[in-house]
Amino acid sequence: MATTGKRTMKFVASLLLSFFLIAACDDTTAPSNDGGTDTDVIDVLDVSDTTEDTTDVVEDVVIPLENCTTDGTDLPAVDNCQHPIATGYSAYGVYFPYVFVIIRENDLNYDFGFYKFNIIDKSLTRTGITQGLKPYYFLAVVPEERSVYWIANSPYIASDPLNSFIPHLYRVNFDTDSMEDITAQYPALRTPLCEANGGTAALHYFNANNNSLLIECAYYSTTPQDKRNTDVYLLNGDTGEINYLADGIETANSTYGQKPSNINRSYFNLIQSNWASEGVPGDLNRQVYWRVDGEVPFKAKELLFDSGTASVAGQMAMDEWYYYGKVQDSMEVVLGESLTGGTIQAPTTSYHQHAPMPLSEKYSNLVGWLKGTSLVLVQTLYGKVQPQSIHELQIWDKETGMIRTAAWDSSNAYYAMASIMAGDPQGRFLIYLGYTDGPTIYFKDLFSAKILDENGNLIQGD
Image 1 (cartoon, rainbow, N blue to C red):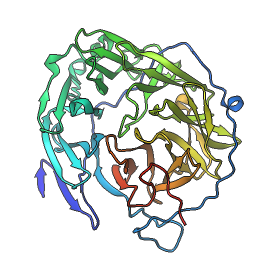
Image 2: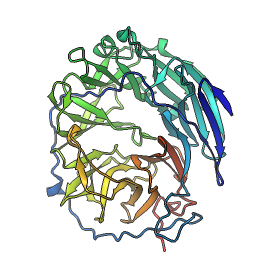
Image 3: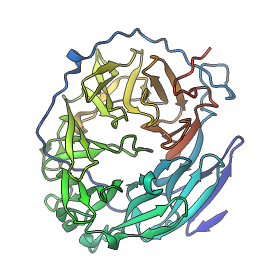
Image 4: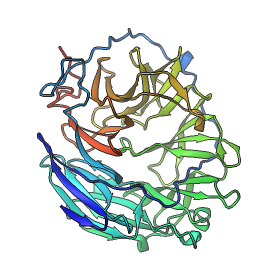
């Protein structure tokens, strides 16, 4: 057991598999920022007219997992086949066989360690540490280079806010474990307004083919001080040219959570809304898919929903299908559409199907969602909906129509952030995010749990 500052780092062995569990504290600096853009509507999707539902109601049959402890009920209180990787992390990313995690190591200083956890041999390696710099949630994994990129920012300085959050660009090679600050090799990482207002930058994608970076930069407007703006843009790493997906002055926008893997890196999705008043996003729910693999981004699809009628849309699948939750007859159901015009609806269930997401770059037939067990509540921010209770992560195999519970916890919740590990040749390891004394990264072997077969289809239970 090693101690740095006031932070105690514990490495724990479970009964079945080794894992590391590292506690970290909440940051006390200035809060994160949201912003957005103003764009024209290209296509408004009316799913009530275009989606054909030919499915029957699926019985809520829970399929017990082999080699997992049960207490004689349908599901034990805690899923004993899920294994924690890290709690209290600051950023994470995935590429087989590694889960990359950045952890704050010192309560007193901005010291963050970069770790890689090997899902096969359960080994843990600390590659390096950034001192005095805080990562901003996201890691951009670039398999073609066997590298991970991220932006870390200097601390907030109350006496000099405009010289706070200076961004630094880092790169780690996950074969050699070399780590370097490459900020000097690139033009200014922030937009002019974000830099002028002391904003915080985060890196979503790095495109090794054209040396472009997909960045979001969040900042406070000077009037009023608490208005949050977020610019989202492609930065040309050679010329410094900025092409906006979203200009935070014009509309509010939210990037969609921390995804363990970017399933289809050719696309990026945003939740956008109008500014209802100064600093307050409106209730218009607009979800936009941008094509971002070229030098100039362009809008591939835009969905427009009235307030309280839909949840967030998941990222684009490899087969160019996207999925979203929509309220029909007081229930949230999962609908999907392809960019070429096909539509699909998940089998109807007696519970809410919340926040769908494609799960695999290898198996496009697999779609995940959170099981909502109570009435849908309207969120005023961006007009989204969300169930009160989300204790189960489920998988729908759209080839067979089967639905399986993949993970559960009766006392804690899950986030709509899950994927089968990118680069996994078998497609067997599910990485997902839950909450146990803080946000926690979990993994589960779907093969040994008898949930998924080697062809990427769900296994029928007894």
